[in-house]
Image (tube, rainbow, N blue to C red; front, side):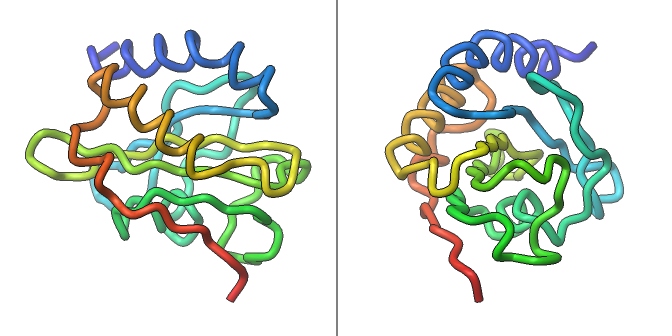
Length: 150
């Protein structure tokens, strides 16, 4: 297990109880693969998820755009949302940047409640990810985009 993987596992293990109690149904990491054409599941809680996933979903959109995303209604995006658990209704995604500014993956959280996540949730989780060393401080300056149906 790499050091980064161990830190991701510790992060989800430490954050899961509070996230679950606050209404999240799942939290975890997706890491860009070596070909940079899909993302592989990293440490997560509390159930397995799809892996690998294409870059056409919200995690790929966050990785590609380098934007922190709030998705109030995941089902409104058709093929733009990869369904791992059809009960999930909302999502937040935060790109993870290394010190060189390259995006190596994303943090993802899902909820069975529509419009569950707020900009405050994104900012708080961003700070926690920075403190854990899983993204650089410049991540706090990335735009927060509320992704509405097109």
